[in-house]
Length: 374
Image (tube, rainbow, N blue to C red; front, side, top):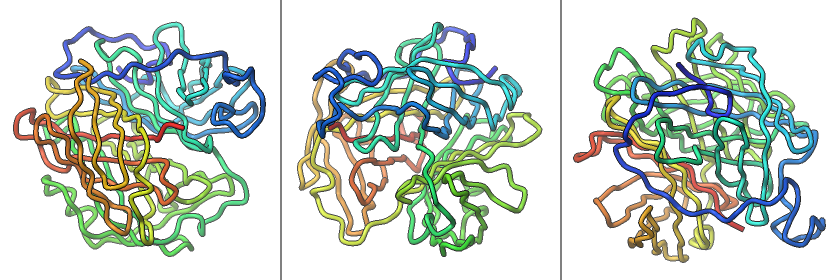
């Protein structure tokens, strides 16, 4: 069983190991704002524009399994027409298509509307990136999906420089883990090659794969990312080159081994001004098949990296981010000593966070994507 929740998939009811919930404002009609849709400079004008195309990568999870997938989509008025272009499972198969509705309100809250169940998240301030997760955090299913808008006149040079990368790796050979996470650094030459180093992961297989290794890539004119040597990697480079998301699946569809990648271009002289604001966070955590959750939170940060995190009971916990000059960071919030590594895009709109070691109490791993509110 697999697939994105708004693609007509059934699931089995389970109890989540933990949940974190933030209350989002209500959604207005797609493409409108509080001022009735005026195309001024206020933040509410950002939406999914008719005719634009998007590539998405994501994961789904329930008590029995996890599955990773990639989607290509086109915005048609207030609908999203999408097609599976990668799937770690046979259900749904590559090539399956469907349509979902959407709405974006004045606070850039994005809701994917489907008869079975909605997904909700946030669109970034430039309308080039979004994240969504299941609307109902207490049901039987979890998801984390990140989309980037296709650009124009892009090339291999769009993906160049120094990057911090987080990964999610699911492997049935490691029977105790639905998936695990880690990070590495990548240096990309802008002409189709790169190297990786500095793997941080407590599973030895990751060090073998990404420690001091080389890779090749291709970026199409619309930003679509692929690997030319036959690996089953499908992704997208954001038009500014600051964010890359990709999924790797086995083309046999056996769901045994799959990976997600989230790469953030490092900054030069990053300052605390990038952190200032309120952030939506979508999170997926898993270890064994009986210990997983998806969550959402909201944090407000000052320039020194201090702030608060709001949980499902509307309890506030102090948080502290330590930001390095290159845009990488560590993130800690004071409710269970959870420490994550991460990176912020040079423009300061998106953060990726990952827990690289198995949590001592929950025995799971976490990946999170945060987008700043307008």
